[in-house]
Image 1 (cartoon, rainbow, N blue to C red):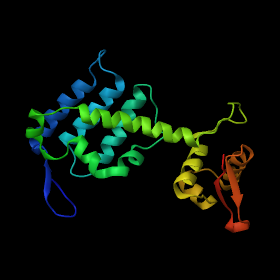
Image 2 (cartoon, rainbow, N blue to C red; image 1 turned 45 degrees about the vertical axis):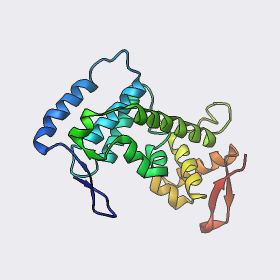
Image 3 (cartoon, helix red, strand yellow; image 1 turned 90 degrees about the vertical axis):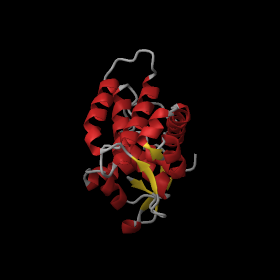
Length: 211
Protein backbone atom coordinates (compact mmCIF):
# COMPACT_ATOMS: atom_id res chain seq x y z
CA UNK A 1 0.00 0.00 0.00
CA UNK A 2 0.97 3.63 -0.42
CA UNK A 3 0.84 5.87 2.63
CA UNK A 4 0.92 9.61 3.16
CA UNK A 5 4.43 10.20 4.53
CA UNK A 6 3.17 12.90 6.91
CA UNK A 7 -0.08 11.42 8.26
CA UNK A 8 0.50 7.69 7.71
CA UNK A 9 -2.90 7.48 6.00
CA UNK A 10 -3.26 4.82 3.31
CA UNK A 11 -3.81 6.70 0.06
CA UNK A 12 -3.62 3.91 -2.51
CA UNK A 13 -4.10 0.15 -2.48
CA UNK A 14 -2.47 -1.52 -5.52
CA UNK A 15 -3.66 -4.91 -6.81
CA UNK A 16 -2.55 -8.01 -4.85
CA UNK A 17 1.00 -9.27 -5.66
CA UNK A 18 -0.32 -12.51 -7.16
CA UNK A 19 -2.18 -10.54 -9.84
CA UNK A 20 0.77 -8.35 -10.87
CA UNK A 21 2.26 -10.80 -13.46
CA UNK A 22 -1.11 -11.15 -15.21
CA UNK A 23 -1.73 -7.38 -15.20
CA UNK A 24 1.78 -6.68 -16.51
CA UNK A 25 1.35 -9.20 -19.35
CA UNK A 26 -1.90 -7.45 -20.29
CA UNK A 27 -0.17 -4.09 -20.04
CA UNK A 28 2.73 -5.12 -22.28
CA UNK A 29 0.38 -6.73 -24.79
CA UNK A 30 -1.47 -3.42 -25.11
CA UNK A 31 1.77 -1.44 -25.16
CA UNK A 32 3.20 -3.46 -28.06
CA UNK A 33 0.00 -3.37 -30.04
CA UNK A 34 -0.04 -1.19 -33.15
CA UNK A 35 -2.53 1.58 -32.35
CA UNK A 36 -2.67 3.62 -35.54
CA UNK A 37 -5.57 5.76 -34.28
CA UNK A 38 -3.85 6.70 -31.00
CA UNK A 39 -1.28 9.51 -31.02
CA UNK A 40 2.11 8.32 -29.69
CA UNK A 41 2.22 10.99 -26.97
CA UNK A 42 -1.24 10.03 -25.76
CA UNK A 43 -0.20 6.38 -25.75
CA UNK A 44 2.87 7.27 -23.69
CA UNK A 45 0.63 9.18 -21.28
CA UNK A 46 -1.76 6.24 -20.85
CA UNK A 47 1.18 3.87 -20.41
CA UNK A 48 2.58 6.13 -17.68
CA UNK A 49 -0.76 6.30 -15.90
CA UNK A 50 -1.38 2.56 -15.97
CA UNK A 51 2.08 1.52 -14.82
CA UNK A 52 1.73 3.79 -11.78
CA UNK A 53 -1.73 2.33 -11.11
CA UNK A 54 -0.58 -1.32 -11.41
CA UNK A 55 2.28 -0.40 -9.06
CA UNK A 56 4.37 -3.54 -9.74
CA UNK A 57 7.28 -2.71 -7.42
CA UNK A 58 7.58 -2.35 -3.65
CA UNK A 59 9.39 0.97 -4.09
CA UNK A 60 10.53 3.26 -6.90
CA UNK A 61 7.38 2.96 -9.03
CA UNK A 62 7.28 6.68 -9.85
CA UNK A 63 10.94 6.91 -10.86
CA UNK A 64 10.73 3.71 -12.88
CA UNK A 65 7.57 4.88 -14.64
CA UNK A 66 9.05 8.25 -15.57
CA UNK A 67 12.16 6.55 -16.98
CA UNK A 68 10.04 4.03 -18.89
CA UNK A 69 7.97 6.90 -20.29
CA UNK A 70 11.10 8.61 -21.62
CA UNK A 71 12.22 5.34 -23.25
CA UNK A 72 8.77 4.96 -24.81
CA UNK A 73 8.77 8.54 -26.13
CA UNK A 74 12.24 7.95 -27.60
CA UNK A 75 11.02 4.86 -29.44
CA UNK A 76 8.17 6.96 -30.80
CA UNK A 77 10.57 9.59 -32.16
CA UNK A 78 10.69 12.13 -29.30
CA UNK A 79 14.06 11.70 -27.58
CA UNK A 80 13.86 13.74 -24.38
CA UNK A 81 16.85 12.24 -22.56
CA UNK A 82 19.19 15.11 -23.42
CA UNK A 83 16.49 17.76 -23.22
CA UNK A 84 14.48 17.62 -20.03
CA UNK A 85 13.41 15.74 -16.98
CA UNK A 86 9.75 15.11 -16.16
CA UNK A 87 10.61 15.79 -12.51
CA UNK A 88 11.12 19.48 -13.27
CA UNK A 89 7.44 19.72 -14.18
CA UNK A 90 5.95 17.28 -11.67
CA UNK A 91 7.93 18.65 -8.72
CA UNK A 92 6.28 22.04 -9.16
CA UNK A 93 3.18 20.51 -7.61
CA UNK A 94 3.71 16.95 -6.37
CA UNK A 95 0.21 16.77 -4.90
CA UNK A 96 -1.35 17.63 -8.25
CA UNK A 97 0.76 14.97 -9.96
CA UNK A 98 -0.49 12.20 -7.68
CA UNK A 99 -4.07 13.47 -7.76
CA UNK A 100 -4.03 13.62 -11.56
CA UNK A 101 -2.27 10.31 -12.15
CA UNK A 102 -4.90 8.72 -9.95
CA UNK A 103 -2.82 7.19 -7.19
CA UNK A 104 -5.59 7.75 -4.64
CA UNK A 105 -8.05 5.06 -3.64
CA UNK A 106 -8.24 1.38 -4.56
CA UNK A 107 -6.96 -0.13 -7.83
CA UNK A 108 -10.25 -1.88 -8.58
CA UNK A 109 -12.41 1.10 -7.64
CA UNK A 110 -10.34 3.31 -9.94
CA UNK A 111 -10.61 0.74 -12.75
CA UNK A 112 -14.40 1.03 -12.79
CA UNK A 113 -14.48 4.82 -13.09
CA UNK A 114 -11.21 5.60 -14.86
CA UNK A 115 -11.14 8.67 -17.13
CA UNK A 116 -7.79 9.57 -18.70
CA UNK A 117 -8.81 13.08 -19.77
CA UNK A 118 -7.46 15.14 -16.85
CA UNK A 119 -4.27 13.11 -16.68
CA UNK A 120 -3.57 13.31 -20.44
CA UNK A 121 -4.13 17.08 -20.41
CA UNK A 122 -1.69 17.37 -17.50
CA UNK A 123 0.81 14.99 -19.13
CA UNK A 124 0.85 16.74 -22.51
CA UNK A 125 1.00 20.17 -20.85
CA UNK A 126 4.07 18.91 -18.99
CA UNK A 127 5.84 18.03 -22.24
CA UNK A 128 5.00 21.44 -23.71
CA UNK A 129 6.05 23.21 -20.49
CA UNK A 130 9.42 21.46 -20.46
CA UNK A 131 10.07 22.05 -24.17
CA UNK A 132 9.36 25.76 -23.70
CA UNK A 133 11.70 25.85 -20.70
CA UNK A 134 14.48 24.14 -22.65
CA UNK A 135 13.96 26.56 -25.52
CA UNK A 136 14.95 29.41 -23.20
CA UNK A 137 18.34 27.90 -22.41
CA UNK A 138 19.18 26.79 -25.94
CA UNK A 139 21.26 29.33 -27.85
CA UNK A 140 19.78 31.22 -30.74
CA UNK A 141 22.81 30.59 -32.95
CA UNK A 142 23.26 29.08 -36.36
CA UNK A 143 24.16 25.41 -36.25
CA UNK A 144 27.68 24.86 -37.51
CA UNK A 145 30.41 22.44 -36.41
CA UNK A 146 31.78 25.30 -34.29
CA UNK A 147 28.48 26.24 -32.65
CA UNK A 148 26.73 22.86 -32.33
CA UNK A 149 26.12 21.93 -28.72
CA UNK A 150 26.52 18.39 -27.46
CA UNK A 151 24.54 16.80 -24.60
CA UNK A 152 27.35 17.60 -22.15
CA UNK A 153 27.18 21.30 -23.09
CA UNK A 154 23.46 21.25 -22.39
CA UNK A 155 24.15 19.70 -18.99
CA UNK A 156 26.36 22.68 -18.15
CA UNK A 157 23.65 25.15 -19.16
CA UNK A 158 20.91 23.25 -17.33
CA UNK A 159 22.94 22.93 -14.12
CA UNK A 160 23.86 26.62 -14.29
CA UNK A 161 20.22 27.59 -14.78
CA UNK A 162 19.04 25.49 -11.84
CA UNK A 163 21.84 26.36 -9.41
CA UNK A 164 22.57 29.91 -10.56
CA UNK A 165 26.23 29.09 -11.23
CA UNK A 166 28.48 26.14 -12.01
CA UNK A 167 32.04 25.24 -11.08
CA UNK A 168 34.40 22.73 -12.63
CA UNK A 169 33.80 20.37 -9.71
CA UNK A 170 30.04 20.60 -10.35
CA UNK A 171 30.60 19.72 -13.99
CA UNK A 172 32.91 16.83 -13.05
CA UNK A 173 29.98 15.23 -11.20
CA UNK A 174 27.82 15.43 -14.32
CA UNK A 175 30.26 13.91 -16.80
CA UNK A 176 33.24 11.60 -17.10
CA UNK A 177 35.12 14.08 -19.29
CA UNK A 178 38.73 14.85 -18.33
CA UNK A 179 39.63 18.17 -16.70
CA UNK A 180 41.33 19.53 -19.83
CA UNK A 181 38.30 18.58 -21.93
CA UNK A 182 35.95 20.21 -19.42
CA UNK A 183 37.96 23.41 -19.77
CA UNK A 184 37.45 23.29 -23.54
CA UNK A 185 33.72 22.78 -22.99
CA UNK A 186 33.52 25.87 -20.79
CA UNK A 187 35.59 27.83 -23.32
CA UNK A 188 33.21 26.92 -26.14
CA UNK A 189 30.23 28.18 -24.15
CA UNK A 190 32.18 31.34 -23.32
CA UNK A 191 33.01 31.89 -27.01
CA UNK A 192 29.33 31.44 -27.94
CA UNK A 193 28.37 34.06 -25.39
CA UNK A 194 26.22 31.68 -23.35
CA UNK A 195 28.07 31.89 -20.04
CA UNK A 196 30.33 34.31 -18.19
CA UNK A 197 33.41 33.52 -16.11
CA UNK A 198 33.55 34.85 -12.55
CA UNK A 199 36.32 34.65 -9.97
CA UNK A 200 39.88 33.44 -10.47
CA UNK A 201 41.90 30.28 -9.96
CA UNK A 202 40.21 27.71 -7.76
CA UNK A 203 37.44 30.21 -7.04
CA UNK A 204 36.40 30.31 -10.70
CA UNK A 205 32.73 29.75 -11.46
CA UNK A 206 30.40 30.44 -14.38
CA UNK A 207 26.96 31.99 -14.71
CA UNK A 208 24.53 32.28 -17.60
CA UNK A 209 25.14 35.36 -19.68
CA UNK A 210 22.24 37.77 -19.96
CA UNK A 211 20.78 37.64 -23.46
